Amino acid sequence: MADLSALILAAGRGVRMGPRGRLTPKGLLAIDGVPLVARSVALLQGRGIKSVRIVTGHLEDQYRAAFDGHAGVELIHNPLYDQTGSLQSLMTGLEGLDGHVVLLESDVIYEARALSPVAAGETRLIVSGETNATDEVYVWSRPGVNGTPAFDTMSKNINAQPQPHFGELMGITCFAAPEVARLRDAGKAVLAQDPKADYEEAVIELARETDIEAVLLDDLAWTEIDNETMFARAMNTVWPIILERDGQGG
Image 1 (cartoon, rainbow, N blue to C red):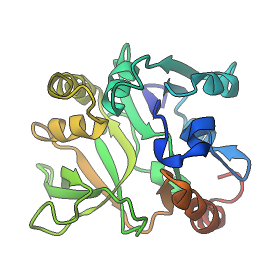
Image 2 (image 1 turned 180 degrees about the vertical axis):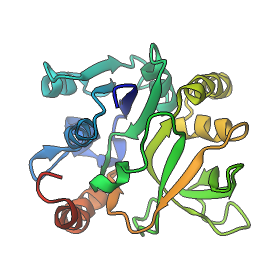
Image 3 (image 1 turned 135 degrees about the vertical axis):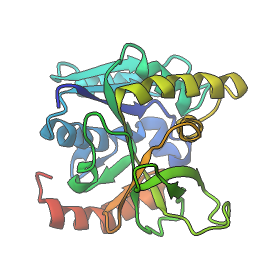
């Protein structure tokens, strides 16, 4: 997928990780000796996505040490990381990217199947089934123009919408080139109202004017890592399932 670039948002300070987060960026937390972002890069490149851009902020020197000389990986620093939310990192990372883009969060671990819907020229938000991970972001869908579910909105409040939710946000979204341009416009509009907004707000804004296909992978093994409890769950519960499904090299 030479015409598809990956963008990983990795600037966050990891405040909820406590002392561990002050010492190590969340994306460089290791499971079985492999940092989360390094695993994502390997999975992306294994699918033919050769260009990976990582937006750094907190402890950027550790990312430079980890990826210095790594073929196909570019590091872009967000100097405002400690004053802004993840949307500013998204906008920083999108500078100069004109083609198709797959956007990922840095602090997730997932089985390889999570990338199966990712394709150049497609605009899709990957949704998982129920995780009971305690920090879920719920996704609601609407009928899309092509007959498939389209992303409508998201919230951490399961009762935010009257209808049942479609699934859970798992931190991987791909955008066709025309939607990348629209995402930039949506991001600018959101940042003008809230400089500390997170990237999800721009995705919600984009969904008001265009269909983002919502692809449900119901039994997906994955987790975000925001605190020590989630890190322990990742190592002890989720990772063994991923190993069983993907193997050590997955």
